[in-house]
Structures are given as C-alpha cells and as structure tokens.
Length: 210
View 1 (cartoon, rainbow, N blue to C red):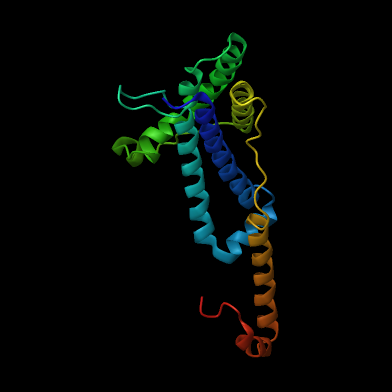
View 2 (view 1 turned 135 degrees about the horizontal axis):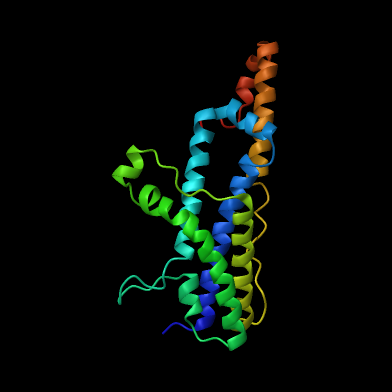
C-alpha cells in the first residue's frame, strides 16, 4: 500500500501540470488583443487549432483531477475524491471536503463536454454542434482557488507545509516564443522594404535546414 505522503506528492504534481497548461494558454491568448493579432498574422490556422487543443486538453485534465475515486473495484483514480478518502484529521478532512465541493461544482459545468465531445464523440452532440462546457471567468477563478486550498490542506498534513501549484514556468517558454515571433514579423517587413537584405543574410541563417 503506497504511503499517503507519496500519494499526495504525486497528486500535487498533476495539479502543477494542469496549472502550467493553463498558464501557457493565458500567456498565448489572453495577454492582449495585439498578441492575438501577432499569432494570427504569423500562423493563423496553427495558433487557432492550438487554442482549441489546449482548451480541450485542459478541460480533460480538470475532469480527471475531480473524477470519482474509482470506477470499479480494480481501478483507483488519483483524484480529489480519492485524496479525500485517505486518513485525515477531522480539521483537514473538513477543509478538503469544503474545497472539493467547490471543485465538483465547477466539474458539473464541464463534465458533459468531456464525456460527449472530448473523451468521446457523441453523435447527437456532434451533429447538433452542441455548446458544452460553458463557464464564467469567476467560475474558473473559484476552481483554481479551491484546488489550491485543497492541495494546501492535504500537503500541510501529509508533508508538513502548504504547496504552491502555480509554479513559475521555465525561462524562455511562451515569452521567448512571442519575442521570436515579433522579430520574425519585423524581419519580414525589412525584407519587403529591402529585398537585398535577404540575400546578405541567407548564408548566415543558423536554422536554414531545420
């Protein structure tokens, strides 16, 4: 039987991953209208598809985190409901249950999208182009706040201190990508204004064969 400490640590890693995906999405698509215009100019179809992919994947991850503790006797899911079923002090159990109620309230808004359009492709939902998974900005803020509360409660008792799920992304991630895209657009403008510039730079391209 795996000890509670290890279970909580691995669950927290999953929460960090889900939050990291959300941060990538925010950095790409929610910083400003100008950023969205940049992505559209550089690769409209690709970044449009990536937007949908990230949303689908994130909703799937949030549902996975809040799935039932087990779907059958021989399958246990690493979820908030499973964590809640471990041995806890009465104070911690109350905090976990309170946070989990908030998490499940958000889950109820997105679970049909997971069941009918993301994890499975329900014929009626797909043919009807049914809008599933709608929620407000406040709903999502409440979810992440509740997940942080849940993790803090579990981690504090199992390991001895709270745990931050909103970990800083490694230097260079989305911001470096956006910086490179900005320079690429400027580079294209220079070439358009002065075609001779491309001839002088062609031999110096480091990733010419990439």
